[in-house]
Amino acid sequence: MDIIPIIAAATAASQPNVADVATLAAIDATCHDYVDGQLQGNTERVARSLHPDLAKRAVIGKQPYESFGLRRMTKEELVSLTKRGALKTPIEKWDRTCKILDVTGNAASVRLETPWFVDYFHMGNFDGKWLIVNALWYMKK
Image (spheres, helix red, strand yellow):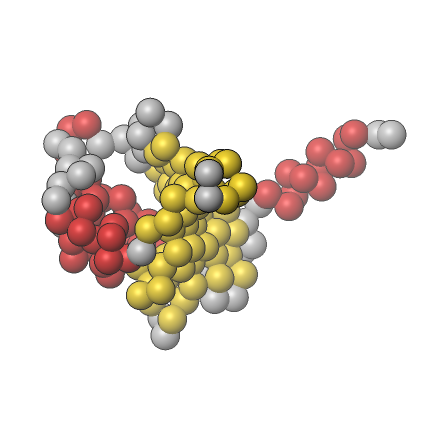
């Protein structure tokens, strides 16, 4: 089996679809509202990045009450954590990257990385406004 075509296909598949500059900027701004809002303790920025029916989850594995355990969080819970300053960090210590993985029509996939966590977002475009609909996250430390 020749692995070169497989690697080439995987590389091509990992490249985002072509999106216009304004779309990419809007998606990036939503990602930064989410993370920078938390780092600032700015609930308005965090809230405006999130769909009202946000599904934010982390894999926690087997639990006594379920085999495939997830830590679940709603928009309201995340905004409340932000209000309490759970991730508030001095700006000189900010280290975060938002990477747009794919954009197709009104859907996008984005990877956010900080020193503390990684989030994978599904975003949707609602009347010109990109919002985070789903987030699967991993705590690094």
